Length: 187
Image (tube, rainbow, N blue to C red):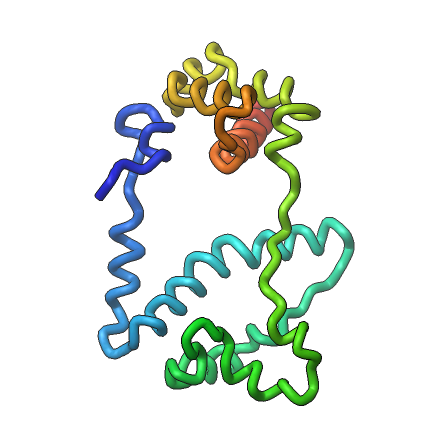
């Protein structure tokens, strides 16, 4: 396995590779197709551990109630047990869903690509959040924490602030962690 950026980010001995656990979960369903195994891991790690909490927090923050009808347990079980050719045909994903509703929905709705909830974090880190980010990632604080490899953090930050690389993903993770960390030590 190649070296992960996360391994460079943490101090020596601070990294634990979780890919083996994910792979072992993937291997559990020996009678499942490759696609079904991917769907299981997607449900377990991406939806449950990432997407659902984000949507839930965003909705709660705006005092909204969110319901995702396709995650009803009966629908999920049905979808998981459908033959793969009903799910994907070539590049056509959600095949059976699109076929079912093709007479009811306009073509542009059926073929609309996914759009994430992107925000201009890369821009903010170079502008409005630059000072705060630099403070949270300053050498004294990073070394005092003893969690992160300052040399690597410094390279990430410098390359991003000087428009050499867009390191918004790793910097966002660091930013959020540092905000959380500070909130815990200031209790």
